[in-house]
Image 1 (cartoon, rainbow, N blue to C red):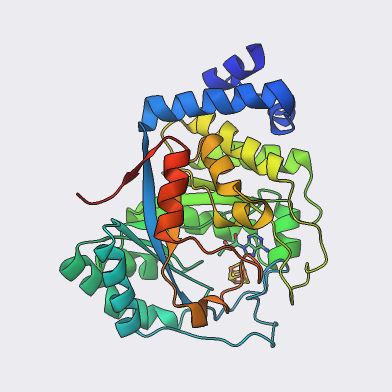
Image 2: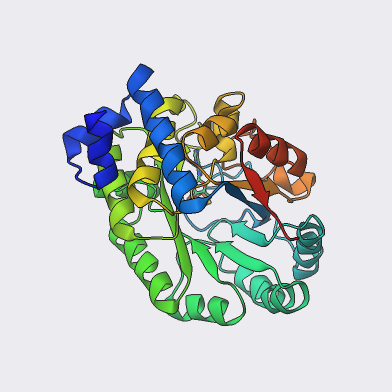
Length: 328
Ligand code: 5AD
Ligand code: SF4
């Protein structure tokens, strides 16, 4: 199809992206088919597997869509110790997963804990370390890098500055500056958007796609908005899964070898949603290692959040005709 050929060649304009973003039926089938071909050509048939540990649900930010926002007084907060994190990283290693992913709310107090544990994970376990801790200073990013982390995810969430400000109560410019700092410090960087935010238009998502391309990051994700109880957006409708899947496919075709996850929130909105993510061109899945008593307090994808086990990840990878990239 002519329109998909244009996308492949990178000759994109906004109306073309809007049309592909809303694709259904044969056009969508073709979009996913080409996306899988591009994945095969540039990334092969391997899916990356990551092990996530959610180390703290304290957060100094107040994003309207997130139940971890600081004004949610109903949420019991927790912060793991470095010993707890280290023993969970051992579990990640024992399952032959190469990357441990440490994620938290924006909690500078957890920095000390992380600084303690990073060198041990790096030197004793020789795992690849990916962080997702939010905005920090250049000095702090530098420190985390020196202590052994190699990758960092900082999603721009939405490219619309007004919407960003309205929902996150901070400026998009500051967020993008942090992204640049992460690159300068030498991290392999990931970014991404949330689809289905309150007040977001198709044109906004088209701008997200273009911003994602401009960022030139190693990883990029598109996640569906899920209404979180006890957040300002708790009564808003969840994202339309087709928009997320089309966004994934478009990024795959435009960005070729980027690592793109199929996020657990896809499974929360639809059974087999993560398989659909792979079939749209994703090539990463994340297994959850947070102990269940803490996990239920880590509410980014609502109380009905889907928990990915290694078995589930491996069977989904297999159903997608891919192979897991594990230690041999
Ligand atoms: N729906 C989807 N993603 C969410 N996040 C937080 N709340 C939601 C929600 N309601 C995501 C944000 C953040 C990550 C930790 O969780 O993108 O970057
Ligand atoms: Fe905090 Fe992240 Fe939730 Fe915003 S999205 S409130 S920064 S955990």
